[in-house]
Image 1 (cartoon, rainbow, N blue to C red):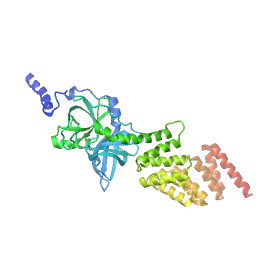
Image 2: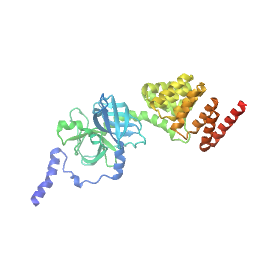
Image 3: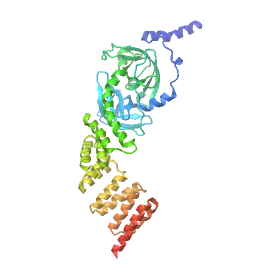
Image 4: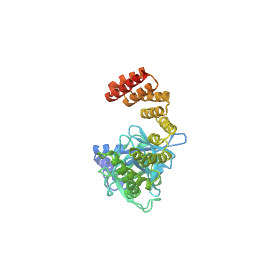
Length: 412
């Protein structure tokens, strides 16, 4: 029995030697993955889902966040899909909006996705690669499921891998599968040191696994992150500082579109800054850019409606916003105001009624609905809105009461 036990204990070492792994510790000897790392790594790991012409899933791989709306994966995972999305843990889906950068030689790609809510904490990149023999962690979404984490070992760095000549590909010990491609490999501090590429398994056998090295990853994303410095600063000037600085924020977003004229979100924020600064013509031009790139951007229609001078154009913009977001109370509210100003009181009443139906405590909508009733000589309904407002907003209730009293005096 003792000899048999000795032979069994020697088998893993022999297998490691044959695979070029060296006499590394067995899985039972490896330490547990720290829970705090798991909590940081798993939410940032996603499943990449590509869709066919019938909107059915055609393939799945893995990826990970390196920015608040930036994802790294393997190019072969994305494959130039016309439609695709990412799946986050908990079955939350967000559309992939565009390709920001790609490296065909190393099979890497940077994707921009719709910003998740709540935000995802992106993974940090390591400054150095782990040594051969060091423990690393693999994070991936097996077959499109929630993220999984595995422990592995760096087996070697290989320079003579076909199709990757000149690259020091990281060889690691754990088995991976096609759906793992694009997932991150991380050091023991939870920093990314490489990207899993499962395509190479078929060339070398089931137990030979490779990752694209950190150097190619940093080369690929550096220009993207540089562009995003201006974008991030613009966001900070809007939402982080005590007092929003719309002019400086707008200038930073303009730097982004100077580098990439197809950056729909930057164009939207340019339009938003012009809106906050009261610059209608500039806001409208920026909105036209947004809607060319992202025709389903509801708020761009809302800002366009504000910027247009003609009632007909304003009404059309609000209607388009409501086609995309039928339960948008503010769009009904603003549409009601335009109808009122255009003298179309029944339509104004209809739009305001829809606004308060969707948001029963929408005080401004109740107030303006009351004034619209007065414009149609419906004092009784205006009085009902006044009674509702007494419970919602005392100041608006007083204003509506004064309007009702003025209406009564005018009738005498």
